[in-house]
Length: 233
Image (tube, one colour):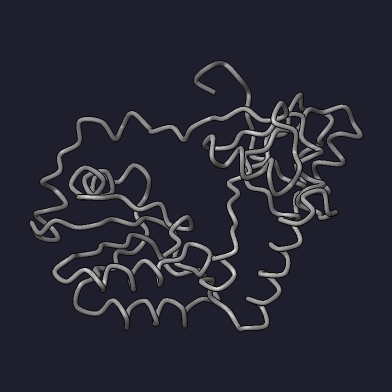
């Protein structure tokens, strides 16, 4: 909008696809396939930021039953053996006019496991809001102490992988972890596991608004920021 482009958060019940020049889908979940196909049928451009990563290790490190892990493993093996194997996610990716991976590695990953042409993708790195520049780091330290810490920000759920992060930090004696985010409804048990395993070295802070000075100060004062969900071991 700052660049003079009109942008709306698309509402299925209020907006009509054909009134737009372009639909941008954030994520590559199969639930968005219907929207993408509708847009294409009505001559509306479709772009996707896939936020996509999956490998064989994920099947065994992911939270869930052995049955669910086995299904994930088999699906990954199928993609590795036959990238063009039909799936709703691949169909969604191929439906897009342009795909915006966050890195060259993600771009190669999508091409390798979903047989998506490289020319269909353009890497766009995650941006940083200017409000995070020139922040007072002392605000967070005054509130939560001066000890150096590793920071993770995001809603607490298996997909964000905080439990594995906590287990890894536990192997580093004397290391402090700060997690900012609230548990997703339905994953209260997962949150309790995180609290139990992280007892003594993990600080849990409920969700902070993007513009909250305390959140900005946390970024400025941490020793390392971990992108959760991408954390594997």
